Every structure is written in C-alpha cells, then in structure tokens.
Image (cartoon, rainbow, N blue to C red):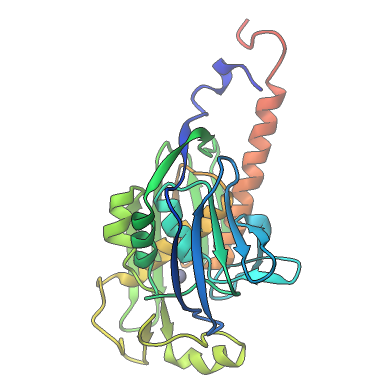
Length: 304
Ligand SMILES: [Zn+2]
C-alpha cells in the first residue's frame, strides 16, 4: 500500500450495497425466445455481482469483463460452455442503483427482456430495497485518458471525479438520424431519463438475425420495431429514445468493470463490442496505475 499522502486525491471510497430481500421477475429472452425467471438475492460484502445458473447446480458466473463470451447485439457472460445472455439492461439498473454485491439466480440462458428497457428492473430493485453493507469499495478513477477507436466509432474517457456518459449515434434511418445525449450519473436521473428507453431493432435485419439464432423472442411488446421509413409500434417514450438506450447499454457494460467508476466518457456510434474493448482497456490502465502506486510505496515517507 502506498502512503496515505500519495493515495489521497486518487482514492474515493463508496459504500458497498446489496438488496434487502429476494425478488424475482420472469419473461422471455429477446434472442433465445426462452422463458426464464431471475431471482435477485442479497450477497455478502466483496462478493460482487454474480450470475448463478439455478438450473445447472448453481454454476456461478461473475459479472465481470473476464467472463464475457459474446458481444453480438447483446452482452453474454459465461463459464465453460454455460452462459447467460443479454445481461446489460439488468446490470445497468443494478449499477445505477449503486449495488455492488448481489446474487442473480437464473434458471435458463438469457435474462428476460421484459419491455426492452431497464424500468422493470428498477422497479424490482425498488421493491427489494437497497441496503448499505459494512464495507467500502474504491471508485475506479484514472489519471490518464483512455480511448478505443474502430474506424468512425470511438469511446474516450477523460479523468473526472464524477461519472458522465455522453453518447452520439448516427443511423441512416428517418426515425433516428443523428442523436446525442449527456447523462450525469445519478439514480433519480437514470430512473426518469434513461431506464425507460427501450432497445430497438430493424425489420430488415430480423430474418438474418433469426437464422443466426437471434431475436427469437423479439416482438412489438419488447422492442422498438423500425420499418424502412418509421417506427412500427409507436409512440416512442422519448424523441431521442434510441441514444438514451445506448447510454443504458453502456452503463450495463461498464458494470463488468466490477466496481464503481468515475470519469467523463464520450462514445460515438459504438456498440457492445467496442464497449467491451473499452472496459478491457480501462481495466488494463487501472492495473498499471495500481502498479505505479505500489512502486511509489517506499518504506520511508514519500515526502521526506
Ligand atoms: Zn440494450
């Protein structure tokens, strides 16, 4: 450990949190079309967020970047050949609620899509109640910017004491076009402005996706369906619901860092695959700066 004087200004601890009481929700999986039940249960401090396959002898899959196995159209975590898909909307709600430790029991391969947003999960967490644990976790804050780029897509993070997510999208579709949104991390802000934003899909992609085993549970009940010209199952919940949903997805993918984070993050035209590369780069940078701190940890006082 570095002397307190060196770490000051880098460390900022937040209280670890779990839920008060078990709660459950059931529904169809967007991609698998399989009906599952998720039961959220309180967990011990330091255990993190963990998926537990209740139908497979309680196999545990930590909700961490190292567990990600697939990133096409949704984020999947797995271990050996067992997985849990479309974890991002639930993880986004948990992250927004400040939950650090929770057991997520699930009896099948995909989290229910419910209405396509994070609102049902926010209501579920609210029904369970959130409780502070007697332990703290250090907020991940980097001193240097981190960036990932893929052609005209990028995600960049600059140091900040707060978490701010800015997103820009540009779809060649009359109902979407260019949209941008800035979300200042705050639970109430998330509940009102981000959580209700639903996932979206294009009719023109459905056949191809279904052939690939995707979108099998998708319907007008659980996603915004876009025809060639317009939204087929309006009205939208927000005019810019699409970019708000991208922020919802990004926050869910950031949960795989495994601890709360601060920074000003700007994403442009990204998706789950680039979110994941970004998280990996943030984790590598955090590991390096922990090494720096360890090296700057002499037995003599640092400021002799
Ligand atoms: Zn999504």
